[in-house]
Length: 629
Image (tube, rainbow, N blue to C red; front, side, top):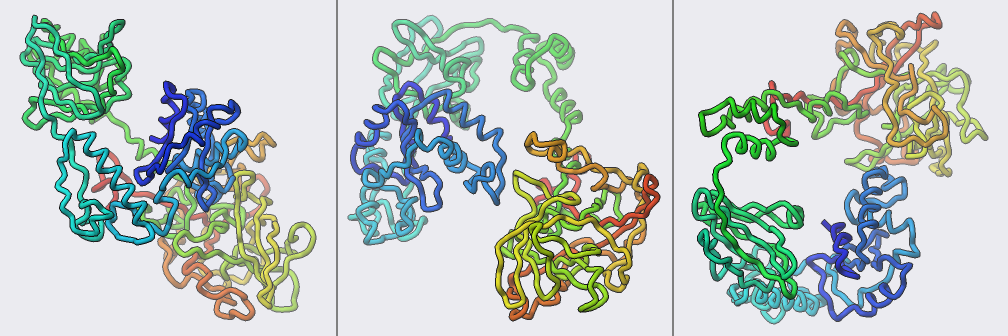
């Protein structure tokens, strides 16, 4: 809604403001410099988090600017962790996109403190919203100013004082609008009760001019008979602009043309006799609203069918009109049957979304329905890389992170091979210690590494050899700076099966139709660096099972439960350097599989890659409330 301010191009300057913003004085000292400097496009004030305070933004309206902001909104990637295009500007709303957009050209969009000219409750944490009816002595003058404006606005809107201001809570501040503390004690603004109802003139009589000079509701009766059309127009000496119409004793509807997209549809009475317009623009000098009645003859069944199809489809066609005319009786088509027929043909976008969802996850979700797939289920997913981007995402609920360690597989002091573990659970076997930032070897336990980031908008991590960002924590609790490691391939060569929690699953051959490579998922944007970066999934590194014949998952988990965290240093805060509460409470265990690769003649190891499975919600088998319950 805020962005529509940019389309008010009939004004040189527009101020975007919130309901809890009150002007203390005119802002000529802000508007003047903005108008005088052609290079300036907006003045605003920043909040403490660096975002724009939407309570007071002064802009120069421009269709080009409006389209540029919309284009930025549509084509700029957004993450709840890294913000717009990785800029750390958080907020998937007007505030967020405007902050990001303005930051691209700080010289044109200037952070200018105008708090001395306004009151903005949103930017002052010490003051409650005025409608909360909470008396705060330090905010009393602000609150009084807000209620003074409310009283003035209500009187002007309603043409008379319609609210009984008898509230006894600090009436010198709340002006009688608060009967008690809290929102329940607040007296809402009264809706305007129109003084009169305009009736359409009879057919053949002269037009009726509305007495209307300010923004207030206007109530008009329906057309008075079948065959009559009553038209509301904005008339001047040079033009007559259609606003709305009522015909055949039907309710008023906004007409095509200038007002089609700018006016709210009128609210019509339950007895179907009148409709009320709440946002008619104030007529300019020399303009006025007039009602005119016309007579029309019935256009027949074909015309009615065409009008119906114009309202419910992307447009009528001759075949569609002819088909609809053949239904019903001689006067009226069978619209009800047409609608029911359409319902049986509809496709479900939600069903398509659910079937194609590819969201890695290891924790249950409010929207995950029956939970995760088991490792043997059809469409369960498997990967060749040991670390997943999910490992680099902090728990939404607790703010905790995952930790990685390396352990000599055959005991302390034995050297290679090494186990790589995440939260104490095996991910792969390594023949040598991985390089830490290409400069030094990683260290074995008790040193461990916090997994800080799996990927951002400039790189990806779901592939063998891709980069992961980790942070070393030494045995004495000393934290080092963040650095990068390479994502290793899954390998269990020589491992003691007692170290694995679950039986390894025998998977179909990698090059068979029962194991499908996931390699066609496009990135949000193509960085143009190489083919390596153009897709999310590298061919033949991620797969899904395309058969129901895989077995061996008896006793495997379906939904995470407490007890899957086995970090060996979890309770040793001296050596681990991190309290148990900073680790995830649960972590999905490692489940491995083997698959024969006929191209190489070798058996390869894969790691189960859990993802969310949403419940089916189709036309044939709908879920109550779309699955909300």
